[in-house]
Length: 594
Image (tube, rainbow, N blue to C red):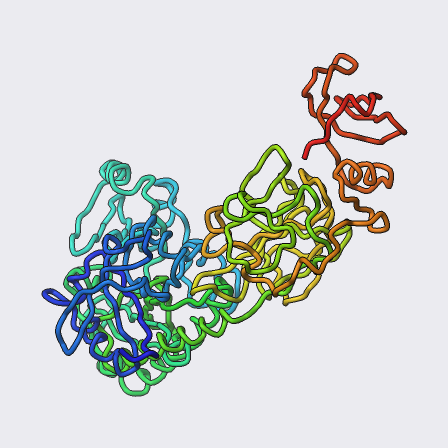
């Protein structure tokens, strides 16, 4: 196989629905076209993945024959359809998913679009159905549509008209009338607490009285640019909507528009649809998900005649995934392969972006901050970057614990820099690490998103959702929290913001030879080699740094082992705070907490 072949994964719960018996022609033909772009498509289901070995038992096409083989898990995976949530989360830790996880729901999107004049004119007024009165009050004024926010394939959509104390309902192709009492029971059985919304009915019908909408199917293609294709979806005259999956049919958009609106009006409507297909996805990606690459979406659009004789577009629904693969032809398949190549090249380039140090290191670790390799068996006196060894941090001579980040020792008030460009996604003003900042970066690592956290901060200088460039001053270091020595606690996450997904920050930072740094902090730096001397220095200089100790014996009725806060040192005595009291003790009455 050629060395520049790019392997793209396709994960499906039912792979047989793609290749082989029962396979859909559009998706199967992708496997024939892909080699022209030096792409090998690997098809597999979640159960075909071995996460321990990071490999997959995949189907692939070779000379027109379906074969199976063991491959490394692809760095890019096309995830068109439903994959169990736990499996999808596991895959995102290891690979770039073409369809990223969307955190904004349809209702939130509609609410935000309604507040923005850009597309407010095509939105249908929508209210949430919380009671039967919500439906009755609107149905008394006009014909309405209700549907579930999470409904699939239009199966929940129903039309309701209220006339002479009767409700005329159309659901799918069923027509029936209900009295007020019967409608109350119908509401309780089928609508109440099932996530319905209500909209005024928009008359979008063909000349023959068939309900229809236009699917504006959008996805990325060559050079990562959005492309779109429109087609009409026509339903039964007895139904409410096109209900394509329930027996409706489709028609090529130009033919449909000409047939129903004539040449002049068809050209005007087509121009509106093309403008929407070209501009809306760019607007949507920037407005709602500016930190990810939205791959595809589907807009369901109705066309209604206005009083002045013009035709207006109405957005019936925004689908954040577009499953309309079978309407695409060879041009779109070529564009899809071009997108895969573009995405591969983009991720490869982005991955080469390097961090800068958030604080340039000036000191070696102190006596109590040696780093250990091989689970603590071998001490590294002069820690050198990228030694490829598993590290544990020795918290004291008595205790070891896993260290999920890297401490950069620095005086309080030292400027902290963003290590790479990105977006501030979280600011925590009060946790075990004091103030902290989390940034999602404009880069990936092996195709996965990269996050950094900056902790033990004295002051935060950025705001949540603010975009920052590499090198921007985002904070000042110095909050104490549980730290023994003033430092910046820096962590890197790959894929997900979970402890399990932290990596050694030194893998991402520029190389530094710590053996060249001072091994003993001198008094002029306000640091000392001994933690005891360090604490004394902090107390005497009255830094804004909280220091804790434990009582070795009973003092002023306070039990031995009690944790207290040190306030100041006076020769061989100390003063500590406990329950709003200041208590004097001998130096030997306390032990520092390391």
